[in-house]
Image 1 (cartoon, rainbow, N blue to C red):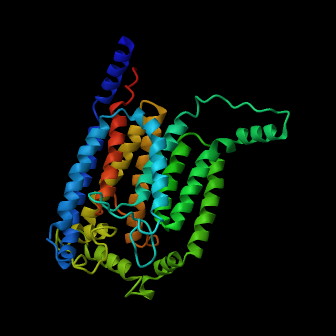
Image 2: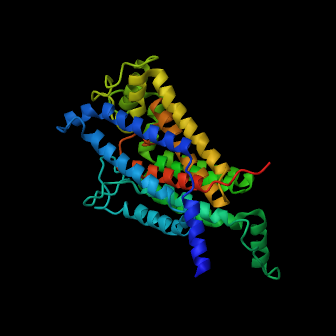
Length: 402
C-alpha cells in the first residue's frame, strides 16, 4: 500500500509540472486569430443563408473555448496513459472509417464523396479521418517506443520458414509489417470515400514517427515508391481527381466551374498588397470565394491583412512547429518524443498543403488550415492534440548538470 501511494504521488508530480508557456501562448494566439478571421470570412455567407452575421463566429468561438478547456485538462493527464488507449482509439478510427461508407450514415454530396458521418443529436457531423490521424500517431508512437526494449525473436533455423523469417527480421521487414498492414487498410478505406488529402495527412506523420524511431532509410525509399505508385494509380483511375489535376495546370480552362474557386482565391491574395484592404473588408468573401470561412480562409487573411499580416500568421505557425520539435527533443522518454513528432508533423504538413492549395502551388484538395478553418470537431481534436504535447512538456527531462 505505501508503494502504491508513492507511485501515485510520483505520477501526480509528473503531471503537475509546468507546461511549456511559449508553446501554449502560440496555440492560444493562433486559435484567437483564427476565430476572429472566421467572423470576417463568414458573415456574408451567414447573412446570405438567412442567419445572423455572427452565426459561424459564435459556433467557432464556443468550440474554441471548449477545445482550450479540453486542452488544459488533457495536459494534466499523464501521457503514459495514451500507450494503452492507443489501441482502442485506432480501433475506433477503423470502425468509423468503415461506418462512413454505409449508406444512411454518411452525408450525401453531388460528387459521391463520403467523408462525413451525419450529425447525431448534439454530436455534430465529423470526418472519421480526423480520428484516424490521431489513432495512427498514438499507436505508432506507443509501438515504436518499445522497439529497443523488446526481446529479440528466435527462429528455428532448421526449417525453411525459420530461415526466411530470420532474414526478414534482419533486414527489418518483419518489424515493419504491422505498420504496413495498418496503413494499407486505412489507404483502402480512404480510397473508398475517396479522400486523397486525408490519406496524405495520415501517411506523412506515420512516416515521421517511423523515421524518428530509427527505421532504416532504405525502407522509406521503398515505401515512398509504393505509396507514390498507389496514389498515382488512384489519381488516374478516379475521374474527379484527374479533373483536379487538369484544373491545377490551367484554372482558366474552366473559369466558371471547376477553376472558379482557385481563380477567386488568387484574386483575393493578389488584392491584399502589402498591408491589406482592412479587417472585414474582403471583397472576395462577399460570396465570390467558395469556402471562404473554411479551406480558403487564408486567402481572405491575405486580402484583409496583406503580405505583412499573412507573413505574421505564417511566422506563428513556424514558431509553433519549431517549438514543438524542441519539446520532442527534451521529452522525458521515447514515447513522449515520438508523440510530439507525429502531432507536430501533422500540423506542419496540413499548414503547408492548405497554403499550397490556395496559392495553386498544388492541386485543389479539401485540407483545412489548423486553428483557422471553420469546423468545431476538427478544432477540438487539434486542441486536444496540443494538450497531449503540453502534457509531454510537463514531464520534460531535467537539464543536465554541467
